[in-house]
Image (cartoon, rainbow, N blue to C red; front, side, top):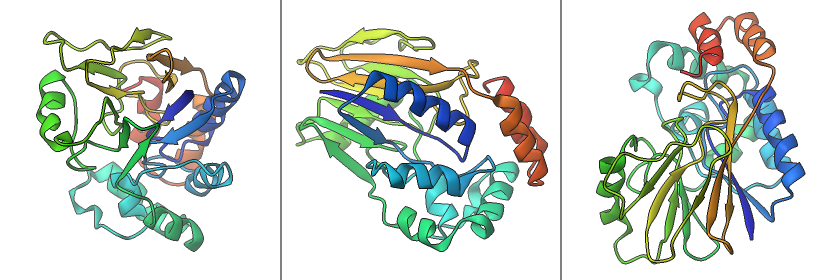
Length: 245
């Protein structure tokens, strides 16, 4: 089974549209979303509408929890908080209700888990191999071979048996997995990459061949930037997109 994994769309319609055009070419059997459809950029309703229309299973991200009113964004940085405040006014009630109903985790294809931040919390960051290994205790007693996560906005590949630095996939890297190992994999961010590659990111997991492919696609960054500025959102949210940081 070929499964497309997406995460951190962050109201970026241009990036989301480009990613889905490429995904549709690959014709996966399933698409799974690791949350944060909202936040940062200027098209929250349009992005949520796409995920809803395609009936894509999605977990609740930390921005989603704030944008639908379940959590107070007091701990967000100033620019992120401003975007959430704007989206609280912009999101339709039906989209807020849909976001509020999203689960914390998704089990799919038997031994695979999808989370936003980590198995322990949607707010936790997995940045390096040690962060990933600390999360193994939260998988105890569960037959999980691969945990897919988002939140860090960095394409990352961590193996339990690999104790050196993680393999980071920036451009169509294919990694072979082993059935006897356990992995934490981040496909990278669709809507706001932070690994110095501004292209929108997603992943393709082949559960039969046990391979994971990191994929990147170009999108219309200037158009997304103009919308951010026109909405009156902080200019830093626009400028960072071109840098991939």
